[in-house]
Image 1 (cartoon, one colour):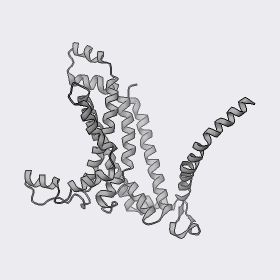
Image 2 (cartoon, helix red, strand yellow):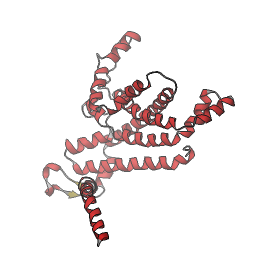
Image 3 (cartoon, one colour):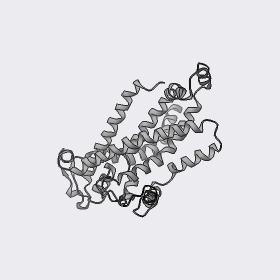
Image 4 (cartoon, one colour):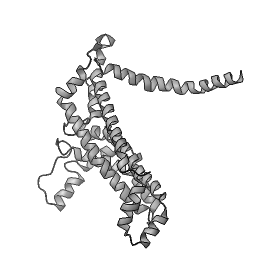
Length: 294
């Protein structure tokens, strides 16, 4: 009897969390999977729901050029921002892990952009990259460039402010994780290698980098997932990705769902993004055996 009461009490404690999971996670996921195979304009109500099978997916890869452009842009953001942010964070963490004054100040200074609102950061970078902004003023005064680039409206250059925001906001998180990982590296290894005549550079690449490779692997996965979900910087810089050169998949999903009210097509795009992120993550997991040392 007591065992039964304990079981019922356990289920009672789990019930609120289970209810939240079903209503806010499981049900929306299953609903979006169903809508991905339908054509549904939200304004038409449930009577406008029409089953179309794989039509949405065929349209994405055959007719819809905007989706292919968004996919390429998303990959560009990931390829350019993830390695740079990880490299800069590792370099800064290695410096701050040594004998440097004002360590706490620098850690806080680099971490603040990560916890800052991306919309606020987007507004700051939008001001910096204006036609009459500080960036163009520096180019004009230092490099004597007469024709100033239009960073915010050019289909090619508008990626640069977004990439800068993603790198700037991502360094802080990677930095804190790397500092914690570097503190776990035994100092005896550095002392032994120094006796053998290893230079600081050799110590960094032969001792530090291999021993913190699990941390690098973790940050690589997290930063890739974040890069594939970029939205706020693009929305602020170009007002929702109207400049085709920088629209991402998440921005495209938002526009299809909440501007064009095509929830079926937007759901299909969302599931393609999920499968793409899953594929990239699985590739990283299978490739870790070659360079990650546990």
